[in-house]
Image (cartoon, rainbow, N blue to C red; front, side):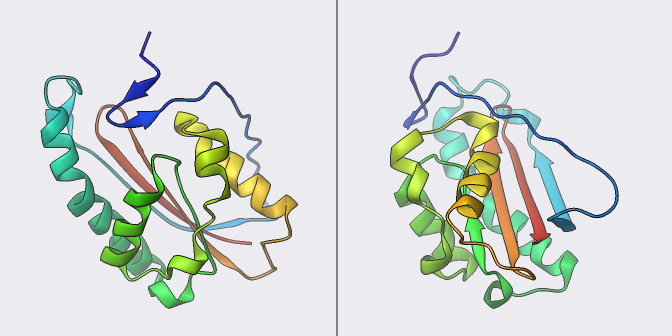
Length: 156
């Protein structure tokens, strides 16, 4: 039972299902990084502190994921976001050197924040719209309750 707005994000009703398989498929995992800062377990009490930690930690996770794959921000064809807010993405893109025109932002206002489903709904919609090409390197970033930051790099 959460309210419809949490830490300045409108929460949407929605769900998604993922099918993962070993072997050949449309996307190949290049690198992943994740960090959880348990200190922030109480989101309501530590809300201001979480907001203050959000960008420095997000930048580090994105940079570490790129480094693990041996890539630079210029190598990324598409950034598939979580739908917290467009403004937060403008800031994070600037901090990480990722090109603003590579952000798939169409669903931020349309579907709002579907929690952990955002990235995969957005990836599916980007593919349906013809935004993905073979060989594209795609960055997916998410942040969640419990102060968990995560980043995936895949090759389409």
